[in-house]
Amino acid sequence: MVFLVIILQWLYILYFQVFGEEFEAAIKKRESEFATYSSIKVFCATWNLGGFDPSTDFDVSLLFKDFEAVGSPELIIIGFQEFISLSAINIMTGGPNTNQMNKWATVIGNALRKIDRYIMIKHVSLVGILMLAFAKESVQSRIQEIDADIVKTGVGGNFGNKGGVVLKLRVDDSSFAFINCHLEAAQGKNSTRLLNLIDIHEKAFQEGGVGKKKVRFEWKKVLI
Image 1: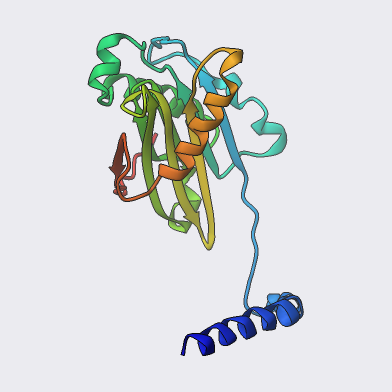
Image 2: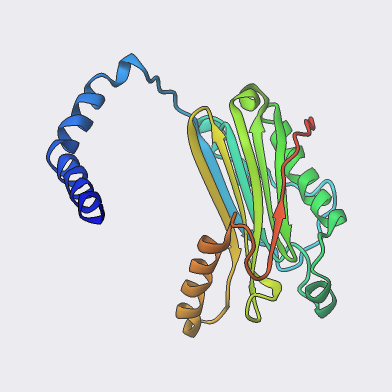
């Protein structure tokens, strides 16, 4: 029986080695019969704030100055690092700083409102790391399965002063994932940063793991 299973597995592999490319080419040729495509623009920005505390009328319009020339994107992902000061208390408590997050959501929202009708579809934070996701109201119905996760890499994965926040979503039938991370500083820490990135990739959206917290998404439409 074991021998028969091995033979069948071998034939299965051999079949796809011989006919796999031919089958794929045939599917590709008839792709227009069952698939359609549309283009969307995605804008991503990263910004280390160094603990800067903005006023609600702080102007960030220069961040989006190129939209007029190239067209405004359907999705906008903003990744902040050190959006709060990395004090010992903030690192130890590790909880979300709702007040500061709301400030930056308002600042970004005020700038985007001058361009088009954008809504904030998700936010996720880990100590000083914050990611805000905005989408045009016109594409909201096409966005599904939004989820977010956090991965701590500070002090052996126990503290969130270093680590990453991860956001994934689907637009129509295409999947997107975004990572905003704050890694070890100093030029001599390249190997540590690479290991941190591997940790973030491996632990995000897994059931369990050291220094993780699962974040579930709930739709909340907010006009900004």
